[in-house]
Amino acid sequence: MKIAVTGSIGSGKSVVCEYLRQKGFDVFDCDYENSLLLQKGEKGYLMIREEFPDCFDGDELNKKKLAAIIFNDEESKKKLEDICHPLILGRLMARSDDPLFAEVPLLFETGWDAYFDHNLLVVTDTDILIPRLVERGMEYEDIMERLDSQMSIAEKIKRADKIIYNNGSLQDLYQLIDEWLCELQC
Image 1: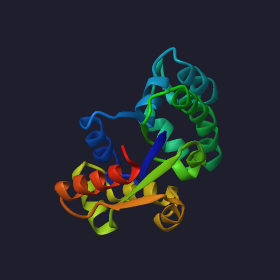
Image 2 (image 1 turned 90 degrees about the horizontal axis):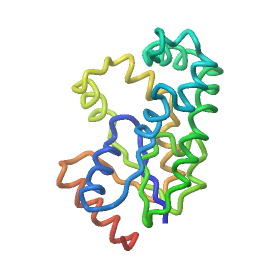
Image 3 (image 1 turned 90 degrees about the vertical axis):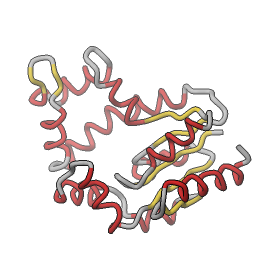
C-alpha cells in the first residue's frame, strides 16, 4: 500500500512524515530524493546542466539562480519538472515497502495521486502558515510567490482522500495522525 502525504509549504507535512518515521514506518521523501538527483554526476544534475547551463558556477549547481528562473518562467519550470519528476517517480515506484508513505509536495499538481492507494492533505490556515514560514527566515513576498505557484487549497481539498487541519498544538496533530492510521489499519 502506497500512501501520499501532501500540503502547501509550511503546512506541517514534514512534521507528519517525521512522526510516521518515529512510529517505525518507511517514508519516501521526494524533496530529499530530488536533492540526491542534483548531486554532481547524477542523472538529474547532468540533464539540468545541459538544459540550464547558466545556473552553474563551475561544476556547482546554483540553486538560487535556478529558482529565480523557474519561478519567473513557466516554460523553464516545466522543463525542470520534465527532468526531475520522472526520475523521482521512478525511484518511488521501485520501492516495495508495505505500507510506504511518501511526502509529495506537488502530489495533485503532478497527477501523482493516481500512483497512490490513499493520500493525506495537511492544511494550515494562512494566518498560522505565514508567520510560521517567516519564523523560518522566508520573506513574505517569497512565501506568497510559492503559495501562488501551487494549486489552491480549495482544489486540493476536493481531491484529497483525508484532510488533517494542522492549526493546533503538536500533540493535537499527533492525535489526528494516530486516528488516521487507525482508519488505514496501519
